[in-house]
Structure formats: C-alpha cells, structure tokens
Length: 79
Image 1 (tube, helix red, strand yellow):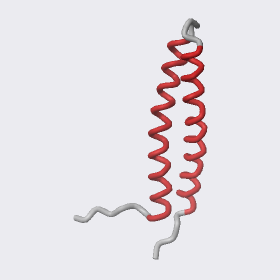
Image 2 (image 1 turned 120 degrees about the vertical axis):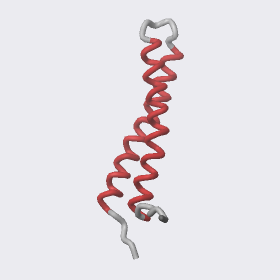
Image 3 (image 1 turned 90 degrees about the vertical axis):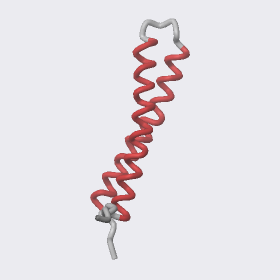
Image 4 (image 1 turned 180 degrees about the vertical axis):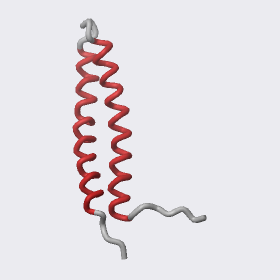
C-alpha cells in the first residue's frame, strides 16, 4: 500500500494558495481596467489581468495534478 508523499502534498497546497491569490487578483485587475478605460494605464492593466487569468487557470490544473500525484503517486506507463 502506498503512502502519501507529504513533501509533495505541502508543495501542492502551497501552489493552491498561490492559485487562490491569483484567482482573486486577476478579476480585480480586469474590473479596474474596464472601469478606467480612459486612463493611460488601461492597456497594461488589461494585459496584466488577462495574463493573470490565464495563469490562474494553468496554476489550478497544476496544483490539482501535484496533489493527485502526492496522494496516489505517479501513473506508470504500460509498455
């Protein structure tokens, strides 16, 4: 019977923490960008918000993958 890899689980939970932070920051930046369309920093804030939104999606999948590997172990290829 396999045991949970505690170091990998902690890494996954830290990654979830970063993901949640980015998940709140990205919509906030997008909202601020669209609220201030006439401001000179509209485009950079909009681009940063979009990049953070994509990063949040990537980090979410990555975090789930890390936790799954910690709990169940890596999947072995059948060759």
